[in-house]
Image 1 (cartoon, one colour):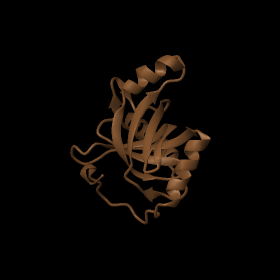
Image 2 (cartoon, rainbow, N blue to C red; image 1 turned 90 degrees about the horizontal axis):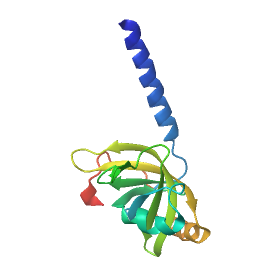
Image 3 (spheres, rainbow, N blue to C red; image 1 turned 45 degrees about the vertical axis):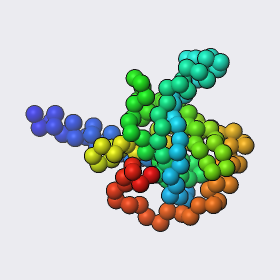
Length: 161
């Protein structure tokens, strides 16, 4: 019995270590409450023509908590879109981010998530994988207008977004 308990503890320790390793953040982060729509990007299963109507029709709206050059922290009311989980490691997420200068589109991969207190939703950390050159330019210009986040608030309320 003790051997089984030790094995379970070792597996849990490995899982937590792997999860934290993938959630390492680099670079300057900025507090930013930007509205977005997110959908599951499934390039392999649907033709480009059908993807624009089929996959974009099923999306989830939310706001960012903070942003950086290479990643975003999203606040969403649910981690599911239809029958798909946003947080699956192999998922690619299509995010349409509303900047003051216009909307941009990017493809991102989930890196971590956590449930917020109460019914406030979920934080989903994502790594930016793809973005057009024009969208990257708009995004970089927007980042230059922001002030770096010095410290995080312990509790985040969706209503503050």
